[in-house]
Length: 278
Image 1 (cartoon, rainbow, N blue to C red):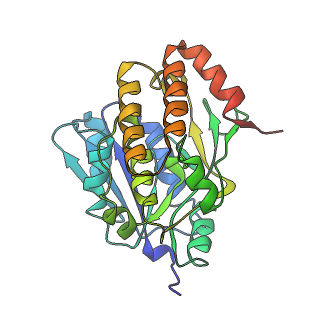
Image 2: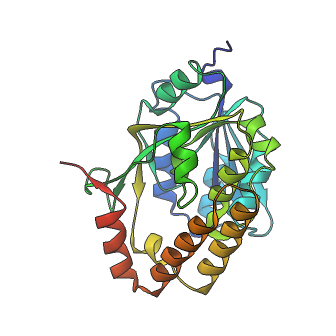
């Protein structure tokens, strides 16, 4: 059995013009110097032009950080796909530029990979916050076992994207990140799920404190969101990952969701799709 260490881990991040520098620096610190096991390197893709302060800071980052500048903004899927090509380790940790990883995150995920050769993707729970970690009480948990994840996939995204650690070769073999609107990660998990030799797992532990403002819920609406959901669900239906009943139920939920005003959509997500910390 292969035994992995921090030397086998690269963090993959993307920033763009709306990234807030202070939030990004906190995120970067949380997944590097504050980890109980540090990663070997960090790949940061700058997705299009950013302001001079961000440019200067990125050029002054530590030796373990590899920054790739893209001339034009091309979207998260393309940025992550390009970034992945610069990764030279077997394992990849995804990290968003405004979230905070818990200090034990990499250590806990390495333990899981070191106990299961077939493991390809491992995620965990997130706790949402507004201003500082801990100011919210909503936790988004995901199904734990491979069987439950594959069943959950039929209707909803089975991973919290900012929490995942995955084997690079598993993602590359599945075609890497591809454009699918806000569903680029869901689309990736679906393609990986076509390979039943790869195990998909989640831990119940909160691995990431995730910033969740009104904007996060506003993006889950509109005609474009619905059309992309349709494309993804057609793919899963055609590939046998979901049945016709799953397709109809999933599209019904997506359609009803886009009709809701942002504040009401947030209320629905908070009360029905999230757990609460006591």
